[in-house]
Image 1 (spheres, one colour):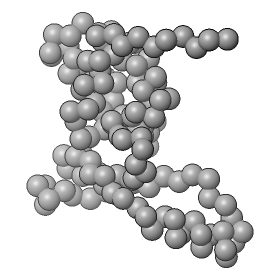
Image 2 (tube, one colour; image 1 turned 180 degrees about the horizontal axis):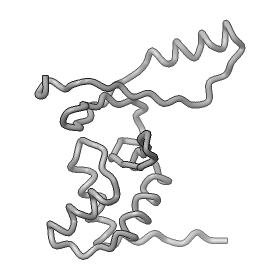
Image 3 (cartoon, one colour; image 1 turned 120 degrees about the horizontal axis):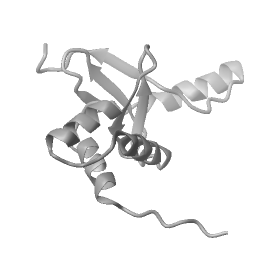
Length: 130
């Protein structure tokens, strides 16, 4: 069975561009509102479908807040990292966490636990907001 080719449409490209140019997590509604202000004709349902497609391809990171609302940010899939998120302005900085490898080895050695995945976020104030 052959896989269907994925077409890059103007709406998909516009959604991806919004995410590439923001260093903060955005909800589907945030993205849709920005596109409307830019006079792009993109339906909210298209935003949701495109976000799911980008997430499944590893091109965006999804986070879900305590209320259950998902937000998305463009991330480089080749480089494992975590995020430092400013509580004031929402700006996100990438944080390399090579210490996780040592932590995973310690878990394996002391507890016999094999770590398959993990998620970490750091919250505080960025330099500009302090």
